[in-house]
Amino acid sequence: MYDYLLIIAVCITYGIIYIAIGKLVFSMEADRPSGLFYQIGWLVTVVGFYAYFWMKGGQTTGMRAWRVQITTLDGKPPQLSHCVIRFFISPIGWLLCLSALLDKNKQCLHDKLSKTQLVLLPKEIKKK
Image (cartoon, rainbow, N blue to C red; front, top):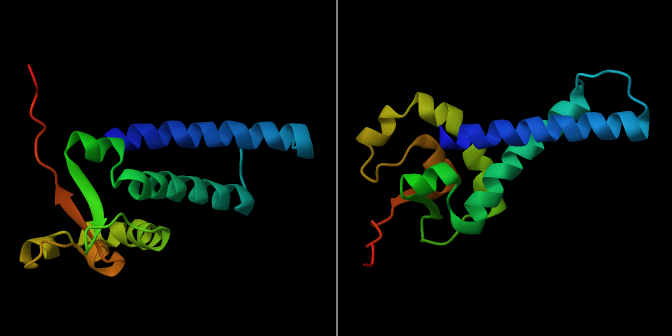
């Protein structure tokens, strides 16, 4: 849920920027964004949001709160190709999430196809 709040803010910001550029540069008359170009831009924005955080540190804000991180199977940070595959396959993977319970490596479909894994990070010890 943490990530959804952030992604909603990112999508609203994208819409505002799209309308502003449309009105200022292209003399767009509509106040609501629409069309294929808008939808493709929105999709690139959402995929870019997740890919940026996954590639930079393996975690989004929500993942940080739950101490999970995405890595490749050999423990390295995921590349853009891993992130894109994971993003587009994950809705199907969530529908089939029971497969992770039956898998010996506890991987969902989107983990297997993107060659990534979720790693539980240890709790940080607070210093006094």
